[in-house]
Length: 284
Image 1: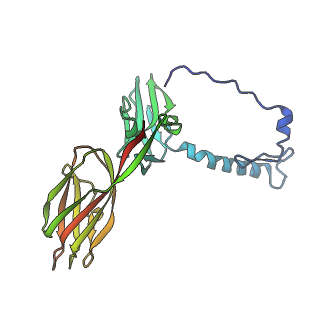
Image 2: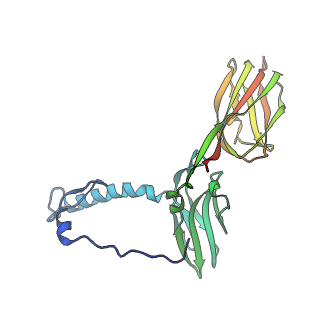
Image 3: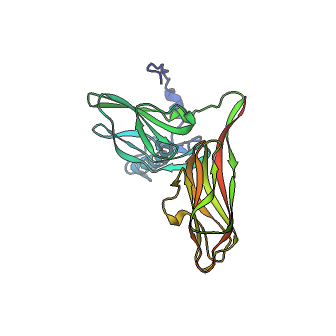
């Protein structure tokens, strides 16, 4: 941001126009004006009317607090929780406290594509890969926080172009009876995208135990544990419950690990469909 700003000298409304608001309601916000003469013996009392208005006003302001970076101690900042959309995927950052800022330095605060809070020397070059929150400067123990959220709040796409996300659904097929271990098929990503879910479809249903399949990117599982993986229950042919926001970079290799095949009868002829969203720019 520029270091020099020009601020308007906003004119206050006239006394006469303010007096006409007495006891009315501001239509755009729904906030009431307290009438002249209201006091501690009024019904409702001044305290009740004032706090009632404050409560409604605080509800309106709550949305503007989301993602705000604030000082929460000596050379530390905290971040309010925020719901946001990045790359067409709805996400929620749960907030943070006690994020250290080195003295006599400038740091930027943002949430990256994996929904992880970052405190770094500079923002990433790719503006579509992160959510900017603030720039924090510390000098001789005194911190200044500049809110960077308006950069995306007031974002405008280039003329003749629009940012969009398109669904992609690549699939792989593993023929025959399944055995545990790494599957022989793999899928190289041709472009960046966000993997949001995986669907498993077995031609022959597993019997006695579930058929469980892990999805891996460059050898690393996208799931925290086996319970999140593709899991086709005994006697069933399909599972659609495996959802996960995972960033996949162009050139990454998606592989599949068979964790469990069933007990009395192994599942067979498995198709895995990957559901993803890819960011594209449409127009000139």
